[in-house]
Image 1 (tube, rainbow, N blue to C red):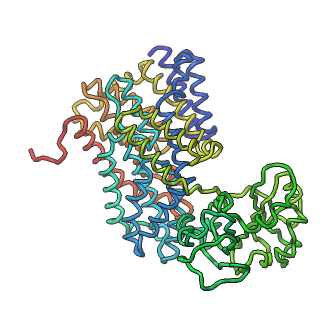
Image 2 (image 1 turned 180 degrees about the vertical axis):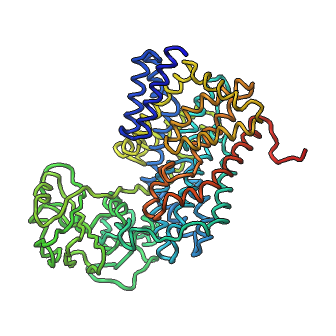
Image 3 (image 1 turned 90 degrees about the vertical axis):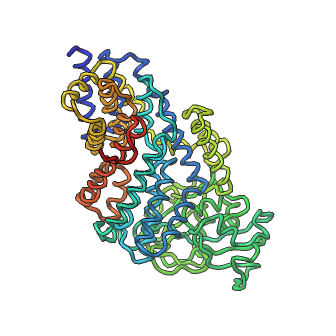
Length: 599
């Protein structure tokens, strides 16, 4: 063993310790590893920085932006609500509808984002129908992870696997090369969860009835402005555009409450709608040129101060002088140079008109004003806190455009009219250029930690190959698997990745084991593709613990799951996934039979 190999193994050991112990963030660990490889002479500067210009890093960043465009235009929210509506009233139907739908959503967006989006929807669904939350959240989270096996671009592990395969001179993977395996795994997951749903724990969730993710009912008043595009159009069209988290409480026309107007009635300029809306819908209302929040339209013109007007939220403090006084009596516009545009209350009735609402301790006020005036509000003892408004405006009018961009991106990449990295980069740029998502939000959508980690671990794989360490480890492994069938070796690579991914990310697992899989395949005189793909599948589709996937960590608290719940349910599923993955990889790339044949 020469110096480069010794140096690489020492760096690898230190990197694994930092990755596992999480003493440093994963992106910081990746950068330190990269620098160590350069300073020890294992890699030169060009090789070390190659990850930042690599296809996997570019595609991952682009997918984050495209996902942000789909979220900003309300597409993912609408699809999530449709899934909830289509789930019926039974537990069996809810699982049967949710799992394939979530898997498809995850195939072109980030699976953690899909899990986060579906979490409150399924929580509300379970509560409304008297079902156990824990019976629904685990199948949904598993489906989101399995959905990443449907396309090449949905998980960093597959992009890195493609990069490793291409470096051997073999043909790379197409965007749908792994789709046959993914379809089989999604079908297996759904059948398994339906057949064994009695094994799922029956718990309601620790957050109780009203406390968890319930900031979705802000009371506000909506004005149809003069010359609005909504004028003369029925209310039903506006409700459809804003989604089902928009509830009409009352309708004022010419200052009078009208009981005779309904979804089919046309809107008229000057109408005031008394509504309850989600945070995102509330932000969207103010951004729509045909609509405005009534309080801002009435009092916003007199608000003084510097800076671009924005929405913030403040909590009414215990003992506040505002308690028991109505919004009208407080005269916020004159006293604080801010407008109360909305109100959220944990429980209890709110007056139909926002101006008549008498404030209580814990009420959350949505305030509109200029930043230079917020210091006075933040310092006032009547408020517990002053924080930025959590809502993101939904650009629903651009939803068809966002879908068209996604479709064009996928077609361009699938037909190889453009390289996948360029196709997705153009898709991300198109989302920003057409204002489906603004530039600032697009940058926020990119998870820099994942981007930097991928760029940092790619050189680790290069170093493993270049120093001959991968070949050395593969030769040692070859003595163990000598005489094994290709199917058994594929299963072994899946199992190795499945165990390692419980402590490392799917990307790091693939980069570490991928070169060993390649060297092993070359030693056996077999194509490397199935061995690398099985390694990546093991890194992505192993459900042994809740820490193996970020999506499982999201549902751990709300579902009130325990560690052994995942082991009891996930171990048999992972074993079946391993068998199907290895069997189909052998069929796709080694010419093995699709169906078992008797000898």
